[in-house]
Amino acid sequence: MEEVINSIRRASELVQNLQQDLPNLANQPETLSLSIDQITQAFTAAKEQLLLISRHTQTSESPPMLLHETTPHQPQMDATLIQEWLRSSHTVTMDQLFQMQLASMAAREVEDSERTMGSEGDQGQGIHASSSRPRRREANQEKKKILVPAPQFGNTEMPPEDGFTWRKYGQKEILGSKYPRSYYRCTHQKLYECQAKKMVQRLDHNANIFESISASIPLVAPPPPLVAGPDPPPQDTVLIIPW
DNA sequence: CACATTTGACCGTG
DNA sequence: CACGGTCAAATGTG
Figure 1 (spheres, rainbow, N blue to C red):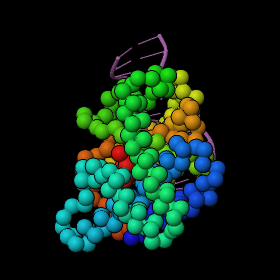
Figure 2 (cartoon, chains in turn brown, green, cyan):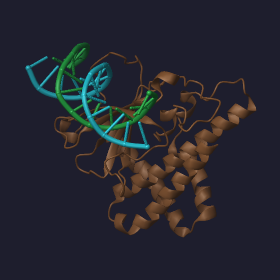
Figure 3 (cartoon, chains in turn purple, yellow, cyan):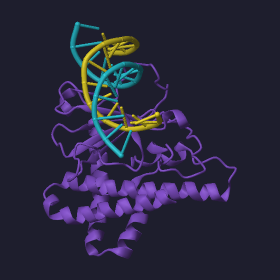
Figure 4 (cartoon, chains in turn blue, cyan, orange):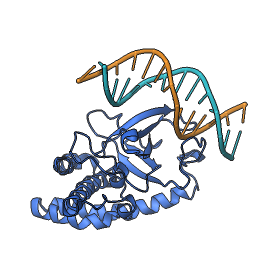
């Protein structure tokens, strides 16, 4: 339950930050919309954790929520939740933000589809999750890409936390890209056989935005520890991807 | 001491 | 052979 509270707190902080930065971000629609997406993710995380908890308490014998039950979640599904929260605790400004969020979702869909068409962008190098080494690769792993705004303060080198624990295992200079790509995997990879991984890289044309590609997502999430620990169970990628 | 990060080496793919 | 993903030893941190 503590995780849920933390997620909600984090989401609230993000909202506050956005509110403060609103004047600065007024002429940066892309950053602005991504910031809103980030808020959505935080709330999504809280919601998913709540679902996990409720399922666990209702039927202790049933397995925890599986990944494929959660990945189909679209941002729209959580929009209602957010809207309710915004309405209840904030003013018109936040309503406007919500409207902007809806717009940004549509915009991003277009952007992403264009990108994956491989038409241009990123100088042909792109972040195609192309394969190379089959060492531990799963046969039918999913790869999901999201854009995340970089922190406006604090350690801007780190991608914003998505509520879960990743362990960095590599960094590479990518040809044709200004910024290095960082490689992360589940901190508790061994403990829970969590195969989730992600790559994070700043966009060439906008260093304020991280591109995060998740891969090797386990189809069946291992059971979380019954005793809540300081770190969340590694259903990591279940939550972070508002596709 | 345990765990995380850094970074050069390694190796499969195209 | 170049590129990019991963490994693993060295190093850092609490």
